[in-house]
Image 1 (cartoon, helix red, strand yellow):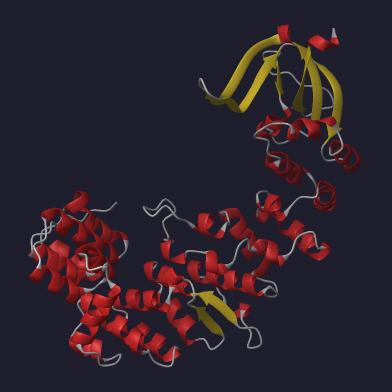
Image 2: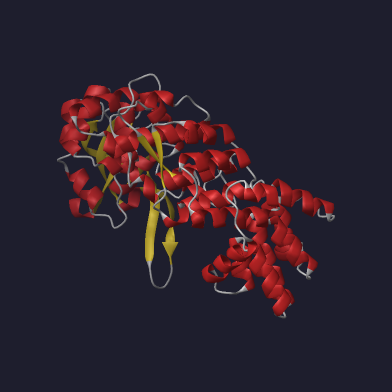
Length: 444
């Protein structure tokens, strides 16, 4: 008769399976059982039941003519037999689970993940047992990242001591791989990027880092010190204790772009003024030119001066980039000349060399003088004017938006996106212009 029995798993609060109020038992496959864990369920049972005992079946999955798979499923049965039981908060029993048929069943699923199991054990186990479990289960840094929260501060300290987890494990990837430019302070932002997606840190794990290091010595790892400085700056928390004269901190240039969008000019000034902070400019999209451009667009002249001083002055190309962006943002000729005198013809020549000569590309790059030349010498369609205007609005180039609007570009292109961009990215000059033109104050 045993060949007619189904092998499954069941969680309970006691050494025997527990039925619900209807007298039914929940039975699941190994890969799904810990998705249904409830506080207090410290016993995992391997059970068996006949097909005829099934009273109800529940599933979440995908099925069509080509493929069929489940994300979750369970059955409710009116009787079952407990074949084996493991007490999850008992060391001997828990470690025996790692060598049991359950782990074989768990690993045999196509979409198998052990994260739910690991999270459950770390919730149930004390620090000592959790360390034993992590060691015997040989959990990787990635698996631990998926399980640890601020509740595990003491556990992490023990893992760091034991070498089972390192400061480097906190930093998956490198700072150069983080696109700080795209981050905003809106969790469900139009850009779709958050600290979690870019840093690989959930809010809980970010809180864990702060809990570990706010009142403790600074991290020893250069990369982690940089991340702690960055997270502290972003969240307005103390950060100077992470920096010592003997251990400089290198931050990505794009972090400044993010702080600009968060309107944290004081933090930017601190970065520029601190002698032991260096900015990394090697990533193309987070280059020094990009930083100069954004400071110019937001017309943070004091910050531009601070950056100018930190770099020991702008070189010729940086001076042209600065003058080009300031012109596109509507700065005065006096303000442009403050950062090195550059002739308009020099700027236009540079724009011609840097552009593919299309109006949209010129507008998106802030090439005001090139846009003027193209509009004077070519017949531009309404669709191309609208497309270029949208590109200029997204980047905050107010003077280019004005120019394109004067030549027939629509301020309501894309569903009134120019005013939405002005609000989204906090472009005050552009917003004031659009409101003066009668645009409604809309947001994404």
